[in-house]
Amino acid sequence: MRWLPVFYVVALLLLEPMTPVDWPVSFALIAVPLVTAFAHGPVVVAGATAFAILLEGILAGTPCCAGRAVGYLWERHYVASYICTALVGVLGTILAAHRTHRERTLADVRFVADIAQRVLLRPVPHQIGSLLLESLYLSAAAEARIGGDLYEAVPTGYGVRLLIGDVRGKGLLAVETAAALLGAFREAAHDEPTLPALADRVETSMNRRAMLLGGSEVGERFVTAVFAEITTEARVIRVVNCGHPPPVLIRSTEVRELDNGRSAPPLNLGMLVGEPYHVDAYALRPGDQLLLYTDGITETRDAAGAFYPLLQRLRSWRTLPPRELLHQLHDDLLAHSGGRLEDDIAALAVCLPAARRSAPPASPGG
Image 1 (spheres, helix red, strand yellow):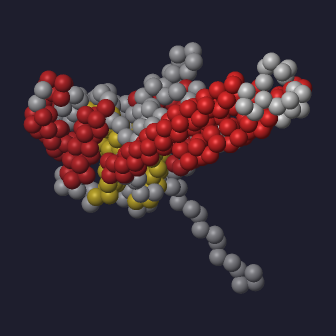
Image 2: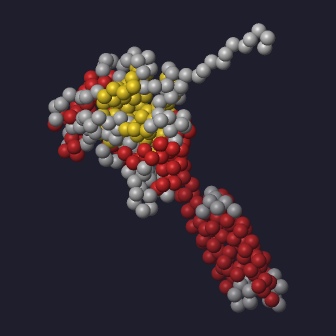
Image 3: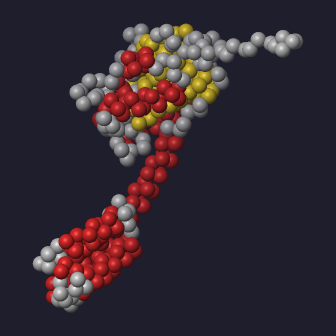
C-alpha cells in the first residue's frame, strides 16, 4: 500500500502518450492525494498533492504530450483540474490525519489489552518440577486479546493444580467473571487440601460475586470448569469436572477422555443441586500427557459443517511433546475452520517426561 501512489503515477505517465488529445489522462492525477492517504500521513499527502499539481502543469504545458501541437498550461479545463486537485489534497490531508490518529488510538487500546491479558491469562511456566507445560489461546475476534476462556497452573504443597474454564457469554462481563474466577483459584489453590474443597471455595466466591453484582443476567451466568491435580510422587491425576469437556489422557498406546460420568454442575449453578463434588483419580505414567481444553476446539466447524475431530487428531500426534502438540493443534484448527473461528479457544497441555536411560559406564580399555 505504501508504494501504491508511485505505481498509480507511473501507470498514468505510461498511458498519457497513448491517449488522444480529447482524453488527457493527466486529469486522473486528481486522485493522487486520496491514493496516498491510504497508507501515509498528512505531511506526505500534502507533498503528493503539490507533486500532482506540478505534474499536471508539466503535462498540460508540454506540446508533444498526446500529439498536441501547443501546450494548454492555462487552459480553463486544466486550471479547473489544478483547483480540484488542491481541494482533493486538502480532504486527503484531513483524512490521513484522522486515520493516523485512529491508528494510534487502536495501538494504545491493543497495548492495554495485551497488558490485561498478561494479568488475566499470564503465561504458565514451561516447567514445574518434573512436569512440562504449554498453553494455547485463540480469540474468535481478530482484534481481541482476552475473552471468557481461561486457564491456570499453580504449584502447591499438594501438587500442581490446574484449571481450565469457559465463561458463559461474551464481552466485558465475561472477562470480569473470568478474572474473578482466576483470582479465587490462585488464592485457594494453596490453602485447600483437597480438590473438592478447592472447587467448593471457588464456587462460593462466584456465588458471592453474583449476589453482590445483582441482576438476573449475572445470576444466570455460569462457568464450566475442570480442576485437576497432578502429584508426580504418587503419579496420580485427580480431576473434578464442573460441566466442562473432560480432559484427554494421551499415551503412546492410547488416547482417551477422563470421564467417569460424574460431572458436577457448572460453577454458580451447584447451589441448585447441592451434591458434593466427585473426585476421579487416574494413574500417571512417565511419557503421559494431559490435555485440558475448552469446547471452542471440539465445536469448530469446517465449510461442510463438520465438527473438529479432536480425539482422531490426537491419536496421530500422541508422540509429540506439549509445545509441538499445541502448535500442531493451532495450525490444524485454523486449517479446519478456514481461518474463521466462531468461538474462543483455550488449551493447556501437561506432560510427565519419560525417564531417560543413562549410558553404561565406559570400560577401562575405552
